[in-house]
Amino acid sequence: MSAFVRRLKYYGIGFGMGLVFIFFFFQNRGCSWLPSNRVKNAILDRLIVISDSTDLVLKEKGLSIEDILLALNEGDVEFDESDKDNESKMYIIEQDNVKYAFSLPFESFISEVQIRDKKKTITPTKIGFGNILHYPNDDYLVYPDSTKLVTCQQEALGLIEPKKILKLIKNSGRFNFEKSNLNQRPKPEHHITFKSKGETVGAKIIWYKNKLNITSFVSEKTESCK
Image 1 (cartoon, helix red, strand yellow):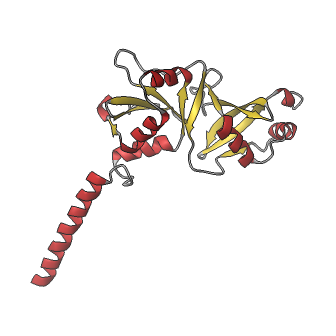
Image 2 (cartoon, rainbow, N blue to C red; image 1 turned 60 degrees about the vertical axis):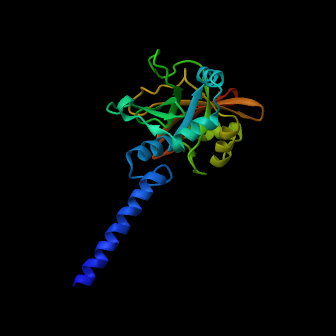
Protein backbone atom coordinates (compact mmCIF):
# COMPACT_ATOMS: atom_id res chain seq x y z
CA MET A 1 0.00 0.00 0.00
CA SER A 2 2.85 2.39 0.85
CA ALA A 3 4.44 1.76 -2.57
CA PHE A 4 1.15 2.66 -4.24
CA VAL A 5 0.84 5.87 -2.20
CA ARG A 6 4.43 6.74 -3.09
CA ARG A 7 3.80 6.24 -6.81
CA LEU A 8 0.61 8.28 -6.53
CA LYS A 9 2.55 11.05 -4.82
CA TYR A 10 5.20 11.11 -7.57
CA TYR A 11 2.48 11.12 -10.18
CA GLY A 12 0.77 14.08 -8.49
CA ILE A 13 4.03 16.04 -8.31
CA GLY A 14 4.78 15.36 -11.98
CA PHE A 15 1.25 16.25 -13.04
CA GLY A 16 1.37 19.50 -11.07
CA MET A 17 4.73 20.47 -12.54
CA GLY A 18 3.34 19.74 -15.99
CA LEU A 19 0.40 22.06 -15.40
CA VAL A 20 2.72 24.83 -14.23
CA PHE A 21 4.94 24.31 -17.27
CA ILE A 22 1.97 24.47 -19.65
CA PHE A 23 0.49 27.53 -17.95
CA PHE A 24 3.65 29.63 -17.99
CA PHE A 25 5.26 28.51 -21.22
CA PHE A 26 2.36 27.58 -23.48
CA GLN A 27 -0.52 29.69 -22.25
CA ASN A 28 -0.92 31.38 -25.66
CA ARG A 29 -0.33 28.26 -27.75
CA GLY A 30 -3.21 26.05 -26.72
CA CYS A 31 -5.00 25.58 -23.42
CA SER A 32 -8.28 26.93 -24.77
CA TRP A 33 -9.74 26.64 -21.27
CA LEU A 34 -7.70 29.65 -20.10
CA PRO A 35 -9.88 32.81 -20.05
CA SER A 36 -7.39 34.85 -22.10
CA ASN A 37 -7.19 32.20 -24.82
CA ARG A 38 -10.95 31.83 -24.92
CA VAL A 39 -11.14 35.56 -25.68
CA LYS A 40 -8.45 35.33 -28.37
CA ASN A 41 -10.13 32.33 -29.97
CA ALA A 42 -13.45 34.19 -30.02
CA ILE A 43 -11.74 37.03 -31.92
CA LEU A 44 -9.94 34.69 -34.32
CA ASP A 45 -13.22 32.92 -35.08
CA ARG A 46 -14.34 36.15 -36.77
CA LEU A 47 -13.16 38.37 -39.61
CA ILE A 48 -10.76 40.90 -38.09
CA VAL A 49 -11.33 44.31 -39.67
CA ILE A 50 -9.32 47.54 -39.45
CA SER A 51 -10.76 50.83 -40.66
CA ASP A 52 -8.79 53.07 -43.00
CA SER A 53 -8.53 55.71 -40.27
CA THR A 54 -7.13 53.21 -37.73
CA ASP A 55 -4.75 51.90 -40.38
CA LEU A 56 -3.30 55.42 -40.66
CA VAL A 57 -2.82 55.58 -36.88
CA LEU A 58 -1.12 52.18 -37.02
CA LYS A 59 1.38 53.41 -39.61
CA GLU A 60 2.02 56.65 -37.72
CA LYS A 61 3.04 54.58 -34.71
CA GLY A 62 5.33 52.41 -36.83
CA LEU A 63 3.13 49.37 -36.35
CA SER A 64 1.99 46.76 -38.87
CA ILE A 65 -0.63 44.08 -39.36
CA GLU A 66 1.89 41.56 -38.05
CA ASP A 67 1.98 43.44 -34.73
CA ILE A 68 -1.79 43.02 -34.37
CA LEU A 69 -1.60 39.30 -35.09
CA LEU A 70 1.35 38.98 -32.69
CA ALA A 71 -0.76 40.59 -29.96
CA LEU A 72 -3.41 37.92 -30.51
CA ASN A 73 -0.78 35.25 -30.09
CA GLU A 74 1.40 36.60 -27.30
CA GLY A 75 -0.36 39.64 -25.85
CA ASP A 76 -2.02 39.98 -22.44
CA VAL A 77 -5.79 40.39 -22.21
CA GLU A 78 -6.50 43.30 -19.86
CA PHE A 79 -9.79 42.13 -18.39
CA ASP A 80 -10.04 45.08 -15.97
CA GLU A 81 -9.96 47.52 -18.90
CA SER A 82 -12.25 45.48 -21.15
CA ASP A 83 -16.01 45.86 -21.59
CA LYS A 84 -17.01 42.23 -21.13
CA ASP A 85 -20.40 42.44 -19.42
CA ASN A 86 -22.53 43.95 -22.20
CA GLU A 87 -24.22 42.18 -25.10
CA SER A 88 -21.57 43.56 -27.46
CA LYS A 89 -18.12 43.23 -25.94
CA MET A 90 -14.76 44.99 -26.24
CA TYR A 91 -11.47 43.41 -25.13
CA ILE A 92 -8.15 45.19 -24.61
CA ILE A 93 -5.02 43.21 -25.47
CA GLU A 94 -1.57 44.65 -24.69
CA GLN A 95 1.64 43.75 -26.50
CA ASP A 96 4.95 45.68 -26.33
CA ASN A 97 3.27 48.56 -24.44
CA VAL A 98 0.66 49.02 -27.17
CA LYS A 99 -2.98 48.39 -26.33
CA TYR A 100 -5.31 47.08 -29.01
CA ALA A 101 -9.09 47.13 -28.64
CA PHE A 102 -11.00 44.27 -30.29
CA SER A 103 -14.77 44.56 -30.56
CA LEU A 104 -17.13 41.59 -30.51
CA PRO A 105 -20.50 42.96 -31.64
CA PHE A 106 -23.45 40.76 -30.72
CA GLU A 107 -24.27 38.15 -33.41
CA SER A 108 -21.72 39.74 -35.78
CA PHE A 109 -18.98 37.95 -37.68
CA ILE A 110 -16.49 40.82 -37.46
CA SER A 111 -14.08 42.00 -34.81
CA GLU A 112 -12.92 45.57 -35.39
CA VAL A 113 -9.45 46.35 -34.07
CA GLN A 114 -8.51 49.85 -32.91
CA ILE A 115 -5.55 51.38 -31.07
CA ARG A 116 -6.36 52.20 -27.45
CA ASP A 117 -5.81 55.89 -26.74
CA LYS A 118 -6.64 57.02 -23.21
CA LYS A 119 -7.48 60.50 -24.53
CA LYS A 120 -10.27 59.14 -26.73
CA THR A 121 -13.28 56.95 -26.09
CA ILE A 122 -13.35 53.85 -28.25
CA THR A 123 -16.47 53.74 -30.40
CA PRO A 124 -17.33 51.48 -33.34
CA THR A 125 -16.50 52.95 -36.76
CA LYS A 126 -19.61 54.18 -38.58
CA ILE A 127 -18.26 55.61 -41.84
CA GLY A 128 -15.79 54.66 -44.52
CA PHE A 129 -14.21 51.35 -45.40
CA GLY A 130 -11.83 48.91 -43.79
CA ASN A 131 -9.50 46.08 -44.75
CA ILE A 132 -10.02 42.50 -43.62
CA LEU A 133 -6.87 41.28 -41.86
CA HIS A 134 -7.87 37.75 -40.90
CA TYR A 135 -10.34 35.06 -41.92
CA PRO A 136 -11.28 31.92 -39.98
CA ASN A 137 -9.70 28.80 -41.44
CA ASP A 138 -12.73 27.47 -43.31
CA ASP A 139 -12.79 26.79 -47.05
CA TYR A 140 -16.59 26.77 -46.92
CA LEU A 141 -16.94 29.98 -44.93
CA VAL A 142 -19.26 31.60 -47.49
CA TYR A 143 -22.62 30.33 -48.64
CA PRO A 144 -25.26 32.30 -50.59
CA ASP A 145 -28.98 32.02 -49.89
CA SER A 146 -30.83 29.51 -52.06
CA THR A 147 -33.64 31.99 -52.75
CA LYS A 148 -34.78 32.78 -56.29
CA LEU A 149 -33.41 36.33 -55.95
CA VAL A 150 -29.88 35.32 -54.92
CA THR A 151 -29.76 32.48 -57.46
CA CYS A 152 -30.67 34.96 -60.21
CA GLN A 153 -28.00 37.38 -58.96
CA GLN A 154 -25.35 34.66 -58.90
CA GLU A 155 -26.15 33.68 -62.49
CA ALA A 156 -26.05 37.30 -63.62
CA LEU A 157 -22.62 37.76 -62.00
CA GLY A 158 -21.27 34.35 -62.97
CA LEU A 159 -20.58 33.60 -59.32
CA ILE A 160 -22.06 30.16 -58.75
CA GLU A 161 -19.41 28.49 -56.61
CA PRO A 162 -19.19 29.68 -52.96
CA LYS A 163 -15.46 28.88 -52.80
CA LYS A 164 -14.85 31.22 -55.76
CA ILE A 165 -16.78 33.98 -53.98
CA LEU A 166 -14.69 33.49 -50.85
CA LYS A 167 -11.49 33.64 -52.92
CA LEU A 168 -12.57 36.94 -54.51
CA ILE A 169 -13.43 38.40 -51.10
CA LYS A 170 -10.05 37.33 -49.71
CA ASN A 171 -8.27 38.87 -52.71
CA SER A 172 -10.07 42.23 -52.75
CA GLY A 173 -12.67 42.35 -49.97
CA ARG A 174 -13.38 45.62 -48.18
CA PHE A 175 -15.73 46.12 -45.25
CA ASN A 176 -18.22 48.96 -45.69
CA PHE A 177 -18.90 50.40 -42.22
CA GLU A 178 -21.47 52.94 -43.41
CA LYS A 179 -23.71 50.42 -45.19
CA SER A 180 -23.42 47.82 -42.44
CA ASN A 181 -25.88 47.80 -39.55
CA LEU A 182 -24.40 45.93 -36.60
CA ASN A 183 -27.31 46.99 -34.37
CA GLN A 184 -29.93 45.35 -36.56
CA ARG A 185 -31.92 42.57 -34.91
CA PRO A 186 -32.33 39.65 -34.94
CA LYS A 187 -29.13 39.56 -37.03
CA PRO A 188 -26.72 42.40 -37.84
CA GLU A 189 -26.30 43.08 -41.56
CA HIS A 190 -22.78 43.41 -42.95
CA HIS A 191 -21.79 44.89 -46.28
CA ILE A 192 -18.63 43.71 -48.02
CA THR A 193 -17.44 44.81 -51.46
CA PHE A 194 -15.08 42.86 -53.70
CA LYS A 195 -13.82 42.85 -57.27
CA SER A 196 -15.13 40.41 -59.88
CA LYS A 197 -14.02 40.72 -63.52
CA GLY A 198 -12.96 44.30 -62.90
CA GLU A 199 -16.31 45.31 -61.42
CA THR A 200 -17.05 46.19 -57.79
CA VAL A 201 -19.70 43.91 -56.35
CA GLY A 202 -21.41 44.40 -53.01
CA ALA A 203 -22.68 41.61 -50.77
CA LYS A 204 -25.15 41.89 -47.90
CA ILE A 205 -24.24 39.24 -45.35
CA ILE A 206 -25.44 37.90 -42.00
CA TRP A 207 -23.67 35.47 -39.66
CA TYR A 208 -25.49 32.15 -39.50
CA LYS A 209 -24.08 28.98 -37.93
CA ASN A 210 -20.54 30.38 -38.14
CA LYS A 211 -20.91 30.96 -41.87
CA LEU A 212 -21.11 34.13 -43.98
CA ASN A 213 -24.63 33.87 -45.32
CA ILE A 214 -24.99 36.14 -48.38
CA THR A 215 -28.57 37.40 -48.50
CA SER A 216 -28.15 39.65 -51.54
CA PHE A 217 -25.63 40.88 -54.12
CA VAL A 218 -25.45 44.54 -55.18
CA SER A 219 -24.37 45.25 -58.75
CA GLU A 220 -25.64 46.82 -61.96
CA LYS A 221 -25.72 43.33 -63.43
CA THR A 222 -28.25 42.15 -60.81
CA GLU A 223 -30.76 44.99 -61.17
CA SER A 224 -33.06 42.88 -63.34
CA CYS A 225 -33.36 40.19 -60.65
CA LYS A 226 -36.57 40.47 -58.64
